[in-house]
Amino acid sequence: MDKILIRGGAALKGTIPISGAKNATLPELAATLLTSEKVYLTNIPHLADVTTMLELLGQQGSDLTIDEKLGVEIDNRGINNFCAPYDLVSTMRASILVMGPMLARYGQAEISMPGGCAIGSRPVNLHIQGLRAMGAEVSLGDGYIRAKAKRLRGAKIFLEPVTVTGTENLLMAATLADGVTILENAAREPEVVDLANMLTSMGAKIQGAGSSTITIEGVDELHGTKHNIIPDRIETATFIIAAAITDGDITLTNTQSEYLTVPIEAFRQAGIDIDLKDDGTMRIRKGSKLKALDIQTSPYPGFPTDIQAQMLVLNSVSKGISTVTETIFENRFMHVSELQRMGADITIQGNTVRVRGVKNLIGAPVMATDLRASASLVLAGLAANGDTLISRVYHLDRGYERIEEKLLALGADIQRLSE
Image (tube, rainbow, N blue to C red; front, side, top):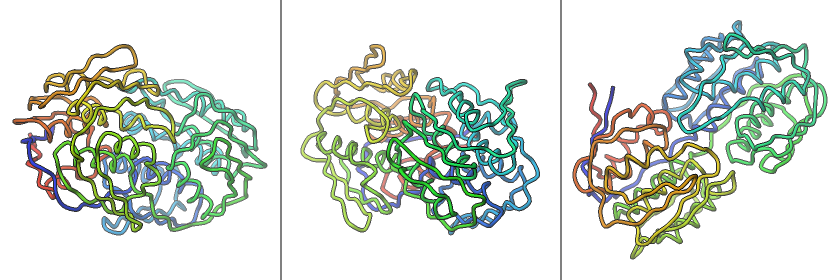
């Protein structure tokens, strides 16, 4: 099992590109199941989760042509398997996103129930309730969700609480349904908008993506398309923090700052100098002093839960006392104990942590517990005095494309150790 060793203290300097968004890539790969024509996706990140989704499509019968530099061509004319098995779904919850497209186009789907997740409960009941409202027969048994429908029909569906994957699954299913589907209290994330843009380019009739109400008028069939995936806003934010806490000066290319309005404003209040260019480049430097900042996570357009762990590191090396409140997941502070091992002054009080800034973090052996927790440990290692050895970095590989190579290009002292 790989580990990452970081010798902290190097100021990051240079230019790197931001990769395509993982959270847009996964539903868009699933959306290719909605057509028999070829779909070409570009700006796909090389990630473990993307590999898993491609393996799942291949198992269903997709013909995949992969060009690591240009993208992936998906031809779904040969789909002949409608089961997403446990061995794949258990490694990536987003596998459930194939349920809506398969049911809508093929009239059947059998999906292994996603297991629990380290960061908290993410039930799929809203996916099931929505598909039932659209006329599907759904049963649960033997660890699987089995759904059938001759043709889905339009319905008015209220999603409570807001669910990103639930919105995406039902949005995809509704594109081929008979009639009009209205999704109320829909997720507004940029990745949902990007999915809707891709579906629209395939012939879907969608209005309201990016708002809390999405209206979909079903069509008889969708056609192929070529779609470029949006940049990863979470990776962008992670590198912004990396530059600031190492007293660095870096430029990021292939960014879309409009998807990071709230975090960028928070980062600027914390003392980070962010210069935005019209061509999608972004220059980041630390201001005179970093100041601790209170934040509360919330669904888009609020402060993303996927940046919460990284923000704890920023506050840990900033002047002052701050609180960070997590409102999305009930168990997303497992990285706190690892940061405490590195000298961070953090205390947990329910769904809020109190952070008192310290002068220096100290390198230590630490263990990643989930994707964003692993990113926070990398950040802490970059800012710490001494060596930090991070184990279970397979979490990191699920969401950050070749992060050690990008950090090496910026001057970090980092290496991957294979056992």
